[in-house]
Amino acid sequence: MTTKTALITGITGQDGSLLAHYLISQGYKIIAPTRKNPDKSNLKKLAVENSEQITFLTYKKWSDFEEIISHYKPSEIYHLAAMSHVGQSHENPALVFDVNCIWTLALLKFTQEHSPHSKFFFASSCEIYRNDFDRAVTEGDEKRPNNPYGISKLSAHQMVDYYRDVKGLFACNGILFNHESELRHPSFVSKKICVNVARLVKNGGEPLTLGNIEAKKDWGYAPDYVKIFHTILQQPQSQNYNISTNKLHSVKDMVNAAFSALNYKISWQGTGINTQGINSDGLVVVSINEKYFRPLDNRFLCGDNTKIQTVGQNINQVPFHQWVKSMTLYEYNSLI
Ligand code: GDD
Image (tube, rainbow, N blue to C red; front, side):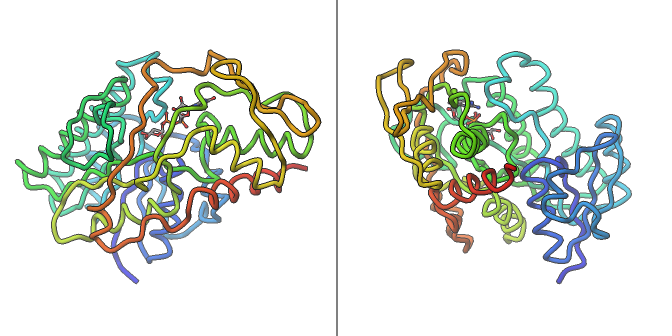
């Protein structure tokens, strides 16, 4: 058990809640700045919303973090809060850049000025990489994002590098590939699939409607990943790491895994936007709608995880089919 203090931004999100849950089990005290009246439902699902180890603070603007950091001088800072939806980032690039980059820069500056011994973790993203590699990408590979979300994350990532390499802060980028869990927001495809597959199997109704089901992602399980955030800050040197599985699965693979978790047979017919998933009664249970397609969403980006494996963690503790099953059963069991 430790006497360390961790500041977490974005504690109410999927990763923030899971990380808080993990750090509480390790004895940490947690400083949790949130906006007024935060939605604590994820923390509640993990039974830590009333933990005495968490100190919730309300902030109104990013400059409030100057006082918070200077007052608490946390041992570790995990900056996870972000506008995290790649698709929606095309609609308001300026806001996305402000939240994802300028806020990160403010936190780095406050840390350097008021708490230079704090270790800083930034949730960077695989969306920063060039999109046409035909092999798994390593941390040193070329960065060339093609959406406002990725651009904002790359700028913040480079600021983290700058504060480490030039200003001497212990600052690390965890380059996160897609990672999912029961706590995922429904706007992400994993949750959408598991919720709708559970509903279709239990109650029937309208088909699950998706966009590009041939898109392939390097998908991992978020409860495994948050432990790695912590591991990264325990290393003797601050560095950047891919957090990934080095395996690709398509959206269609996820649909198949979710139906199969509930022993429900479907078959596929048609191609492109005419693809349909059909059940054993001949009913359409999956259809495609162009409105869910994204510009430039044709990348098969896979993360080489050799480097993170060297810090002693098996990052693939829960394999793809197992966590998709767990997410689907969770949704199925929560239906009345
Ligand atoms: N959301 C959504 N809804 N995605 C769909 C749908 C749909 O109906 N149909 C197909 N997809 C495809 C998307 O086009 C994308 O290729 C893939 O499913 C995954 O989409 P999301 O789950 O929305 O995640 P993401 O890849 O855009 O972003 C997540 O992962 C990034 C790391 O790669 C987020 O967590 C980002 O914050 C993160 O950086």
